[in-house]
Length: 236
Ligand code: SF4
Image (cartoon, rainbow, N blue to C red; front, side):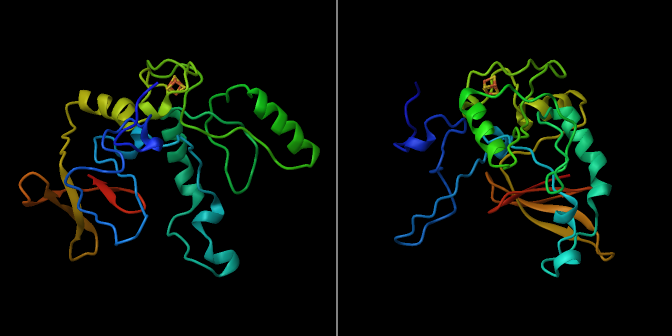
């Protein structure tokens, strides 16, 4: 089995080299702090090693203020976004089961894998005490899709899936986008601000070229902010 990266036991199977410590890392820790945050400054970002749990937001996630007065309602509803969830799930491949759970809407699912022994026992116990127990919804294919073979259950997902049976943007989205000839990929670029025009609409992304430290801008009609908890990526 693999050796650890920089002595960190939890990292031994992680695909992104660098793990918790990245050379040139701009973040520092307060003295005595043990807070650590896994950053993946690589093409494909966290999609290289995420857990592949792919849940939809529900109607109540989009409108939390209306029912209980807390938080803010989004300007769009679940119903408006649902067709796009359909498209994404159909393209990347997500397994799951239709359960009609209000807080976790059903999607376009491939069949879930059969339960393992422990899951079978757990399911029986949950049924006995009437606790809902359903298969996860995960971006792993159990049937071939767009030239990608179904998962063969080798269990090495965190190292990256050689057969591209789980979803990562580097294996599933970027190759076909590059093949169109219309994708320009800019790496070593830290997005710093979305610039807004006089009409209040986003019109450019300002980013810092990590190699030259120069500030550059990209103008576009549409922007996607792929937000993580501690930092974001912007695509246009
Ligand atoms: S084929 Fe292996 S690495 Fe790929 S998704 Fe299945 S278990 Fe994970």
